[in-house]
Amino acid sequence: MTHDEIFAKVRATLVDALNVDDNEVTPTARLKGDLNAESIDFLDIVFRLERQFGFSIPREDLFPESIFQGDPKFVAGGKITEPGLVELQTRMPYADLTEFRKDPRLDKMEDLFTVDLIVNYLQSRVNAK
Amino acid sequence: MTLKDQVAIVTGGSRGIGRAVVLALAREGARVAFVYKGSTEAAQALEAEAAAAGLVAKAHQADVADPAAGDRVVAAVLADWGRVDILVNNAGVIRDKLFVQLEADDWNTVIGTNLNGVFAFCKAVSKQMVFKQRSGRIINVSSIAADHVNKGQSNYAASKGAVNSLTRVLAAELGSRNVLVNAVAPGFIETDMSAAVRNMAGEDGLKKLIPVKRLGKPEDIASVVVFLAGPAAAYITGQVITVDGGLSLGAIS
Image (cartoon, rainbow over all chains, first blue to last red; front, side, top):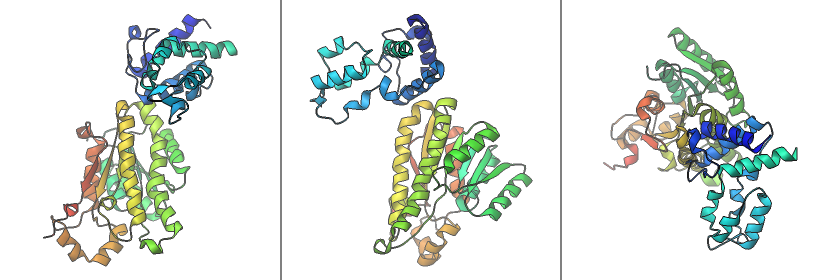
């Protein structure tokens, strides 16, 4: 499956799950910031993608936002520490953290969850098959 | 009829408040699946009464404290009617004892039905309401005893207080999917369950404490449940509605 084919499926999924228009679902659109996804929507998106792609997607694989809950090794003063960033990159090898590393605030982490991130994740899963 | 073609599940539906809720929802046009634990005769009588009136009420035997009961009943209802619009968690038990006499079994029985049962049924309908229908109403029958204490009800009050908290959190989580979650907190209602308390306190003594000077009837609760289930309550979520004739106001005279 090509990157474009995966993108088309992801876009269709997000249009259904989030009640947004086709043209809003751009590669750089952020799920929360741009497409107004709520926490419950993240679950819905995962369920729908599982049905679309026919393999199981552990939610913590795609949206590993809870890994930093209360661990002082990974978060200090509202920012993700260097070990935390290493952990994040390990969990999300398909994510480009270059921009995020410049100001790794925990409350900015949700900006990482873009349409492209989902596509890249699915691409890595499809390629691994 | 405000609930035409809707599907409702009512736990603890064969007697008391639950029975009145089943009939009230059915009269508004809903098809009602009600859950009963042991009162087979009462359940059959209710089915017959509904059918005679041209209403749809179907009995499902289950103990809501059984962790598998929620999924099983909801699956049966979906097989019958294909959707669940309204869940009324009404099943409740009491095991009143002063705390020093309270055994773990008394605690676990009350928490098992009144709290874990609510959890299991909410969980069982949640995916259907949130992801498939994107709509639904959950109404939990709580009690004023959560906030206005009676001695001997530590287990009961704890279970109902927890239900109130669960109601608020679920409302916050599910609101964006148009699933509205509220609770009704009855005061003293004329049911079998409250008979012991009513006998102990004396009805006349109780009535003095209630500004409207009468005990509640199951229908007084059922009408509020119907309201919360219907279109008129489309903008209410996360609330615990007290229905007690003013008892909890605590007016001394």
